[in-house]
Length: 230
Image 1 (cartoon, helix red, strand yellow):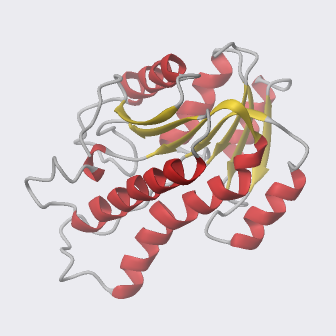
Image 2 (spheres, rainbow, N blue to C red; image 1 turned 90 degrees about the vertical axis):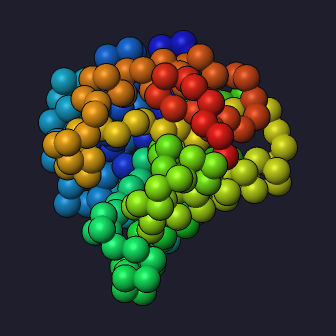
Image 3 (tube, rainbow, N blue to C red; image 1 turned 30 degrees about the horizontal axis):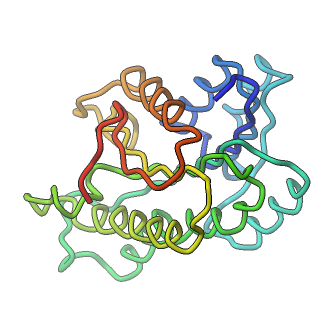
């Protein structure tokens, strides 16, 4: 991508999403970045540093009416990339036998259903040769699941991957579709014991997305561009 490219970044108020917003801006992208209504303070502060490049919008992707309202506000805009970053997890120690139904639904809706609803809503705002990407996880690989840990989170990301594959099969157009795994990163969600810093993950993740821009088709990749088995 050229640095004049426009990106709609959903879920950028903290952690990996915020780091991705900052990295995009440093590389000269025009960015519309979103967070939930009461979590955009850090983004707004970032916008004071990049007033001509960054616009901040609020949306809770788990609220369909808010997604519809955001689409109405951005209806005339076209983007070279739509990136949906959404992720929550339950207690790491919970198995599928332990997790409460409401907690299971919270993780699945946030990690799998809501990102796909955003993609379905905004796909028409992405240029014909553009990129649609989601933040997934290497834990979403069914092939690589040899330990059975993080069961509910794994399941939610595997579901997201499957929904993206279905989306690719239905759409069959020239867009590049990316399922990105950032690695285990030291954030509030990843925890202090994680193996990567944000600085080791996010710039490389963006490098990979830039490399695949315009290639078309669906790709499941880690932050270094390595193909992850389904």
